[in-house]
Length: 430
Image (cartoon, rainbow, N blue to C red; front, side):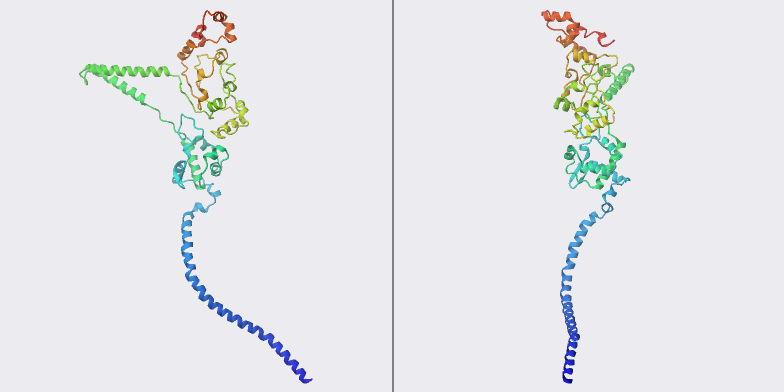
């Protein structure tokens, strides 16, 4: 019994020692592994670090940083667009750059954004469908640069999408352009310098005429008096001709073509769309004047038509805006006779059966309307001398029955306007 008990005790001791020795042996293996791994890491990793990693860091990272960060690491590029668009104060250099951007003198990515190619900065006699620089500058004067960026980069109208296609403007560029536009409100549209050639020649002729007259009397400069007479004769004729021509043309406005508040084209409406003149100028047949169409006439079409093929939505929006605000469009009158002259559209259009082109020219081909005749008395009288009276009209049959009967009987072949009082002073001046 004692021997068995001792044997059991010995077995239990071995089991207990096995639980203690086993972890120790496992720790010894870990120590060996760490020694091996450390040796391996120090041998290989150090080689990789010294050969590969520093080379990549110095070549790729440094080149990337110096290439991009040196260009973009400025104060404005670090700021978001929402802050850049709020800039209100500008230096002289920034205003100059904004002006150069507006005039297309700065190339962005080898491209030039030239605003003045579409928006006039000078007064022009030809019709430009795009709004001028002063008009758009006033429109966006109280708006932010962000509002301008939307119309430049993401326009809504079809016409503007075509024009602004490919614009590559940064927020800084747009802010500077907006700054110059604000300045342009004070600069305004430049007027063309008047031609002073005739005036200068008139002054020179007058001075020569005066000197020759004085010399002819005093006899100092030219001993040959014939030279003085030649100068006096030539300059006298020239001075008389200039004064006479300008005096005759005084008060007349042939070719007068003012810029209207809305760019209305008769070539589009009357020519392309074949709109009858009497549809808009409906008082021409029943009144002394042809009248200017009210906004309600325009809205009959533009209630639906809001975009034009040439001007986009800009000009039509002016018509709609004036109508909705119940304000008349302030059109500039072109044809205007003196107050002492009587003229009736009803008499000429309804009774005389004269079409519009007889006095107003080929309106259907005019984008920008201008005055064709000089509206002189001679022009009116010449028309009355040559124009035949249209006796198919009941008006003439009633009031000039004797002439109608003679015409019908074949006694006369035609009647001119001058034959029914077309040259009587009281017809137009009473």
